[in-house]
Length: 422
Ligand code: UD1
Image 1 (cartoon, rainbow, N blue to C red):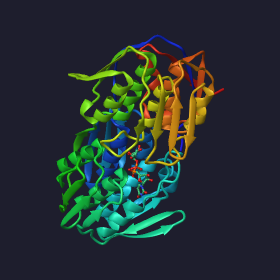
Image 2: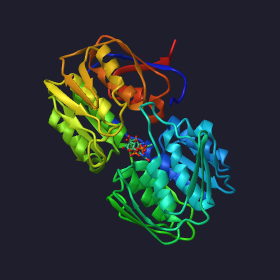
Image 3: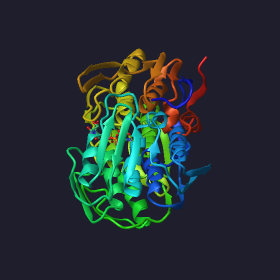
Image 4: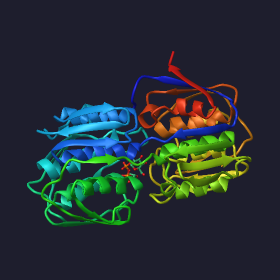
């Protein structure tokens, strides 16, 4: 799914990156924090909110149900009162994260009418684990082609064992369980930092959640939750994008506000490729002063290498010394950007969920197209290591996940600008 109208990123070869930028709040956290506000009447304030397109979509979704929202730089205020539990298809289909509204609506209003989930265009993304988990708490679903209707008189705590540590399913079940009668255990829960962030906000609202961030979460349901003020964690995926850009260009940068403790594995991987990274009082410091080395990598749920990092790590490997094998274990369609990397002169072969990347010294600028948020970022990263001009045509994807990717890269010395597609 795309955000806005078509943009072109125009990238020229530039000097090594240097200087510092500030990493914004995490897209994959803030959207769930916003959905969670539905659990309590009153006015909620969320800080460190990234200025990205998807936050606007979530505001519209909440407003369509009767909430009032207002935004100022870095802050969103959400007033919850008289919610109508109907999430319209045209908004839900724009953004996969809209499914996060399901658990809160069922828990608070006993009913949720939610359009079919949309999301990035990288294959079929089911929500069966969300539904099975919520059914374990007593919800029932009527699934229709145009959306689903969930009902629950009063949710009751239960034992939920996830077949896979799904981020979205863990979040939905955790939010629903917060207002259920009794205790819920979620086994094989996803452990992403964004889940711990959501649990921390819910606990401030009065929820009884223990173990978020581990694979066993216990939620003791409460009668009522209170409105909250909460600061969103920084975006580790955005931070990793700049590490990848640094790897391609060389240089030395500071990623202000980035959290090293959320990025251990990716820092280890880029370290194997030749980058130096270390936690700094203000964020993450990183330096690249040699040609990158090839490494094999495989995407896994947290704390493994996130699937979201993979496209721009692949861009680094395209110019690394040696041959790398990259394996995608989460989403089938996440190698579409490879065809575009090949247009830039990369030597990549894909076979099922594997890509074999033979590093070349330099890529060559070309006209390429981005198909999702991270693919767009990966092409921009790759273009920084290309001779000549590259134009990345982007149908509104990059702005869904990055407040100002081109501007931030410019601050670090890159030669990139954005213009409406002609
Ligand atoms: C979230 C992130 C996304 C990230 C992903 C994995 C947001 C908005 N998006 O997506 O950027 O790439 O985590 O880290 O936070 N699955 C099922 N049935 C389900 C649910 C998931 O089969 O009911 C499968 C998915 O198709 C996928 C895998 O489980 O293959 C992981 O998906 P999940 O962790 O749920 O990802 P999302 O929450 O959608």
